[in-house]
Image (cartoon, rainbow, N blue to C red; front, side):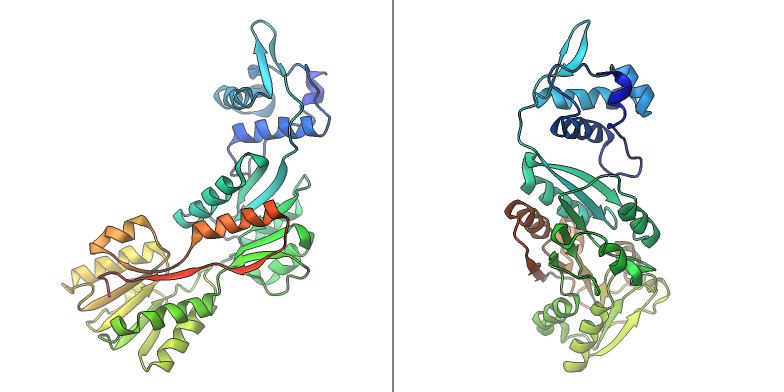
Length: 343
């Protein structure tokens, strides 16, 4: 095989969040599976890879080392690298698209990858809640995948998301974290029921909330969080006769004793705590704090911050199980209230 032929089917995608050494190794494995590379074919040198693919020598070497560890390629001093094994189970190829890579999304990713094991090649992309990037990544994909796993959250422009998602064959689609109105077909989903989840969590915390006269939801004006959260919050407050407000900017908030704040964004949580401290108010006594999304830090911060959170690890695991079982599923992810001294 000519070196020039090799680079026709080996690609590095600058937009992908998948490490480049894995993109390189995955491309070589895919080329073997497709019959484009055969046993004993000589591979380009590390210098050639670095130059042609515009990657560092360390990245090229790491990709080859990964394949050597898998037994796919071997190297001979003076001759270079060559294909050693073409007899392996064909791997499923997955297009994984996240809105962002936060602590919580990393939990989903890690659980998803761990549950799939070595049976999958994953092209991982992040669109930073930007609909235009989301649209470009899906419509301009250069290869076919066995599954498309997508978390669909947008700050703006998401009204047209269903049209883009509907270009994906429904039997290959798995929506994570949120369903999108207008998406059709027999697709799979593992999702949060945002309105019901916050309502039920607040009902469970009702006894602790009774010592406060007002509940405030910090919901930034430009946010990817679904509006259903506000609906569930309002329904609880109206049903149980709490004063309530939706706050768009916590930095401008006049915090007073007798209020409890439900916070969505991690940055806003920092601002909220700083403001409470500056007023010499006691968290859990004068002012209550509830935070969305469980993290290890919230278990110990201020002797523990009360959280309401989906089970992100379970979400990733369930998505992987859908792929492995090849059975369509439509499942709400578990959602938990964790009471701590902050309310």
